Every structure is written in structure tokens, then in C-alpha cells.
Amino acid sequence: MSRALPDGLHLGRRDRGLIPVIAAVAAIASLALGGWNAARSLSREWRTGAGQQVTIEIPDFTGEAHRKAERLVKVLGADPGVDSISILSEDDLRTVLRPWLGTMQARLSDLPEILTMTRRPGHPRTNLPAVLDTLAPGAIVEENATWGARLSLLGESLQACAWLAVMLAGIATAGVTTLSVRVTLIARRRTIEILHGLGAADSLIARRIAWRSASLGLAGGAIGMVLGYAALAILHRLVLPFLDHQGGEHALWPSGIAEWISALLSIPASLIQSLLGVPVLVALLSFVVAQGTVRLWLRRLP
Image (cartoon, rainbow, N blue to C red):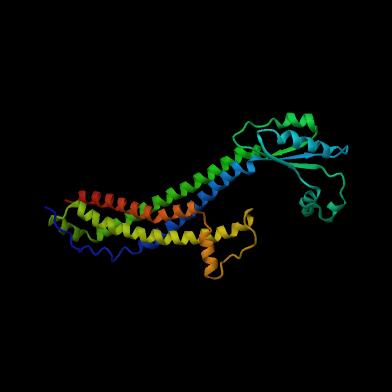
């Protein structure tokens, strides 16, 4: 018959040093999740956005470049595989050239015609070389899709590296939890032997130590998640000026409560949900590892 396990183990006296270690590992896992989320978002944006962009340049050697460009707009605009196509205005073209040519770009004449085209995902791809050979011979095409395979592979590799970092963080958590539990068992060996001899079941002793490890894992995971969340908020704040839908410059460090709240809330909801799961997963892993370690150790008792 099992007996109630008294609080004779005094588990809270020596293992609190585990919290900073787990917090550091959880912070690393949080940053890895942020990297995975960013890589996934960039891959998705490339597949549905930039990867569908095509730039066509028509040199103006004979003065007919504009007429050819207008014909291309009519023909390609009616193609079901083309989502949109437009001619870049001369003012916009000179604005693009200004960083490289400075004031010299204002004196240039016979500028080429530049067309920007967006393919429609999920539709048959237009045979662009055949169309250009007919309507605009000598046109130069720059198609982002030619780099699509390599960039997709890069995005998948970055995501795999992020998951590898999360897995390594989990292994590190399991390792430090095992070490902490073993130290506790060695330090409380005599007490555990007495309790075991008085009829305390292995499951009762293991559960008592496992719950203590889970609470430490939850505390350390929560601290690490908060640290990682704050770091990701700062990084996301620095990235905002590079996004098309965000404007303005931001200081490196938020000034005031309002800016801090804005920075913390600007993180994507999917990433916030992933981060909230970090403390729970750390606590669950600590509980399972501690259970297994204690049960294995108790089986070896005489």
C-alpha cells in the first residue's frame, strides 16, 4: 500500500540555479522560431510576389521602342497568364537612374522603354521569348523566376536550420534537466531510500520530482520567451523601414511605454502563438525527462 509522500525531499533548496540555464536555452529557441517564421514569410512573399515579376527592356535605336512597348502591353495584357503589365514612365526611369548617374541622367536621350510585368500564379506561363521575337526583337528580359529555385532552396534551408536550432535547444533542456535531477537524487538518496522503504511508490516519488522540474522549466521557459520576444520585437522594428507597407525610420531602442507596446504588438500573430508555446513545451519536456530519470534511478535501488 502506498503512503502519502511527505515534503522531506526539500527539492526547492538546491535546484533553482536551473532556471537561468533553461531561460537561456528558451531564449535561443525563441530566436530560432523567429528566424523560421521570417524565412517562411520571405519564401511565401517570393513565391507569390517578387518571384512573379518580369522586367522587359526595349532599346530605342530606331525611335520605335515606344510603339513596340505599346503593342506588347496590348498583346500581353490580354494573356491569361499575365496579371498586369505597364510601361515605366520616363520620369520614373530617370529617378531610378539618378543614384548611379547623378545629374548626368537628365541629359540622356533615347532612353530605352522599360516594361514591368507580373505573372498570374496558377496559370500557364506565357511563352515570352516567342512573343518578344515577334513584336520586339532585341528586347532584354530580366525574369525573377530564374532565381526562384535557388531562393526557394535557400528559404527551405534557413527553415531547416531554425528547426535544428530548436531541436538542439530541446536536447540541451533535456540534458540539463537530467543532470539536475541526478544531482537531486544523489543529494537526497538517503531520504528517498527511507521513503521507498516506508512504502512510497516509485510513481509517487517520480511525480513529486517531475512536477518540481516542470515548474522550474515553466519559469525558465517563460523568462527565456520574454527575452526572446523582446529581442525579436527590436529586430522587427529595425526591419520595418525595409517593408513596402511601412514607412519612416525608427530608433533602435523604443522610447516610452507607447513605443514599447507598439513594438511588441507589431510582431506577427503566428510568431506570438509559437512563442507562447515555448514555456509549455519546456515544462512538458522537463516533466517527461525527470519522470524517466527518476524511475530509471529507482529501479537500480536495492
